[in-house]
Image 1 (tube, rainbow, N blue to C red):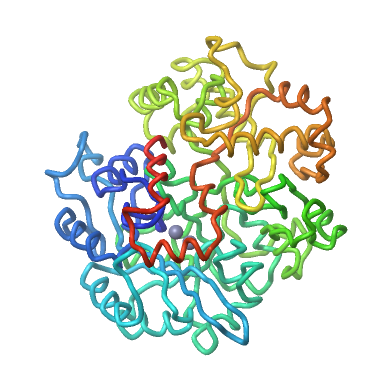
Image 2 (image 1 turned 90 degrees about the vertical axis):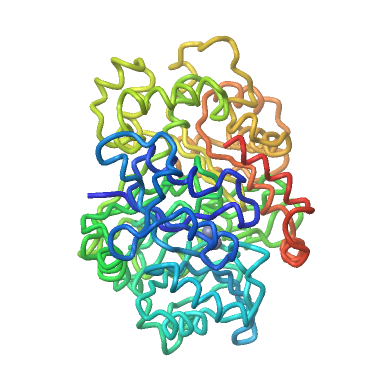
Length: 522
Ligand SMILES: [Zn+2]
Ligand SMILES: [Zn+2]
């Protein structure tokens, strides 16, 4: 059995960490216990050249990092390193049936030669040099056709299919069915990526998805985020084994998931005014933001309600198991009251890896008693609760990550008096003040509104009045210890899309995107 994360990005994609080199990817993946990692960004010429220089062929259709580039090579199996499979994501923006469609697609290939052939075809259609995840005016159907012509062995997977702005089923610019999106070529689609804001049970509500494999990947934009979602494969380590697992489910043993509430688009809302609503509440407001009277962004939960033909909780016969986890540094942060980005948390993370094994072993397998013996009661209890799903969930919305809480404040021993609101509310050093303020306001709104958030099914206080009540602040202060994956990429969803497109045209390097070196904290 091994863990595979197939959708990631390199430092050549916009808004990604400069740390995303083959060396860092390999080391981070190995530390986490990811055996097979997508290379990301196969269309980008500079990344292709770097992969060609630093990787060598390993098992059939896979590559590994050359020995001389490996950091902390280790012993035994570890010294063979993480395997790579050539992967990339294309953003298609085009018009179909009178509407603008924006859909992301993940492509996996059996080698760098295939990557070059396919890139050559795509180069004729649009600019593949300015962004590791290029934007092409090419329909998903035509992209799939080109892949099938160029490399029949390629694997084509609609990416994060529920994301409102850029996906196959997205509420803003997607389709209602796979057939509508891919037309006559729909039979060549065998798997879909469920994305961070949905988990398998949400997808099981659509009988139309029964014939597809549900896969999960991190879509990481920094090394720390690798594996936050991933696939469990029980098959041979080879491209052929991977293809069978992804397309037929033979050897796809299950998936590792985010709690879907933690994803940035779980509920409906309007981020600018801290408005977050469950699908039902949003319906009662006609999908309109009560503050500015504009349309709210429909979340994944609501969009699934629209397309589902089965009730919540439906269990299809042919289904794969899944586990919901959060990254280990976030568990450490939650159990110590420090921020994820703090030096102490990072040190303890590396300590745990040294003593107990890979991150996934610690999160999934190491006996709680062993964790307690080496790293104390709270870290062990945090992991126990995580494994049992005993977490409080505050849903994300309109580009704002949700929050998963492992401890109540009164359960924590005061770590060292360093506890600050900024640290408690998330990524600390990596988080902007604005983002922190928004989170704080939202918490207050939720606390004032009701206790639904505790149960994980509602952040319903939508009115600005709720945010101004003085009782709210007290409520927020009580909720001292939170676990969040809020990351600087949140900035991006605030920029109008036209601005993003303009950035692409201007090319990387001299733009506002530079602020995203904040990813270096992650
Ligand atoms: Zn994407
Ligand atoms: Zn991506």
